[in-house]
Length: 450
Image 1 (cartoon, one colour):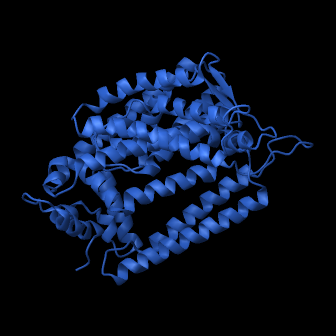
Image 2 (cartoon, rainbow, N blue to C red):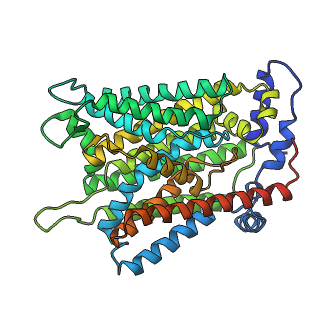
Image 3 (cartoon, rainbow, N blue to C red):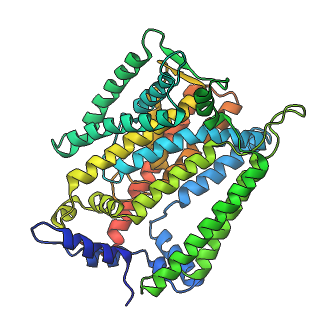
C-alpha cells in the first residue's frame, strides 16, 4: 500500500519525541489526505474534487471566482480601461506589496496566531533601507542594505515570538504593542526631517533599490526568463511525481501534472506578453516585465517550499491543526512559533524595501495600520484560515490580487479612498464568512479524530 508523505513525516516526529504518549498521527494523516490525491486518472480526480467542493471544502475557488467577477465588473465600469495592458502592469505592481504582506501573515495565521505589527515593520524596513543608502551618509552597498533590513526586522519577530511562545502572552496584545513600538522606531529613524528619498540617479545603491519596482526586464530577456522558469518547473513537477511513484507514495495522475504545467506556462506567457506592450509613448518606450514580479515570485517559491516540503512546514501545520497533539508528538511549540514570527517580521521588512522602491522614498506618513489590515486581508481573502492549520503562501498571492484589483478599479473611477476601504472590508468579511462556513462543513462531515 502506498504511503503518504504525512505518514512518513509522522515516523520522523515519533523518532524525535522526547517523552509522553504519542498520538496516532499516522491514522489522522491518512484520513486527512484529500481524496483527489489518490485518484488514478484525471476523471477520478475531477469527480473527487467536485465531491469535496460540494461538501463545503471549496479551497481557492471562491477567490478565483471573485477575481473573475471583479475583472469583468471593472472592465465594463471603466469602459475597457481596467484590462488594458498598461493598467494591468500597474495592478501587478500595486498588488506586490499586498501579496508580500499577506505572505508574511500566513506563517502566524497557520498557527492560529496573528501579527498586528507587520504594517509598521514595513514602515521601519523602508526607513532603515532608505537611511542606509543615503549619500552623504551611510551609503551601504545595496545588497548589504537588503540583508540588514531583513535581519533587523526579523529580530523584531523574534522578540514577539519569544513573548508569545515562552511567556504565553496573547499574540494579539503583543503585536498590538509591537505596532506602537515600531511606529515609534520609525519616527526615531527618520528624525526631524520625517522623510527619506531615493532616486534613479547615478548613485548606484539608490538606483538599484529604486529599480526593484520601477525598473523593467528587457522584452527578449523576459521571454528567456520565462522559458527557463517554465522548463525548470516542468522538470521538477514531472520528476517529483515519478519519484513518488517509484517510492510507492501516492502521486497525482499524469494528466493532472500536464494540466498544471500547461496552466503555469499559459499564465507566464500572458504576463510577459502584457508587460511587453509599450506603456509609454512612441518616442519613449516603456515595456518589459517589472523586476518586482520575478522577485516576489522567487519569495513565493521559497516560502512555499519551506512550508510544503520541510519538517518545519509540517510542524507548522500540525501545531495549527491541533497544538496539544503536536506537543504530545514531541514537536517543540516554542521553537516553531518563534521562527514563524521571525519569518513574518523578515518578510514584512522585505515588503518595506518594495514600498521604498515603489514610492521612491518613505516618510512618517506611512499608514502602517492600514497596511497591516491589507496584509491580513490578503491572506484571509486568499483562503488562509484564521483558525489555523489551513492555508498556503499562494493564497496570499490571490488575496493580494483581489485587494489590488479593488483598489485599482475604484481608483480608476475616481472613487474616494473611504469607499475603497469599505469595499475591501466587505470582501474581507465575506472571506471570513466563507472560511467559517467551510470549516464547519468540513468538521461536521469529517471522520478525522485526534
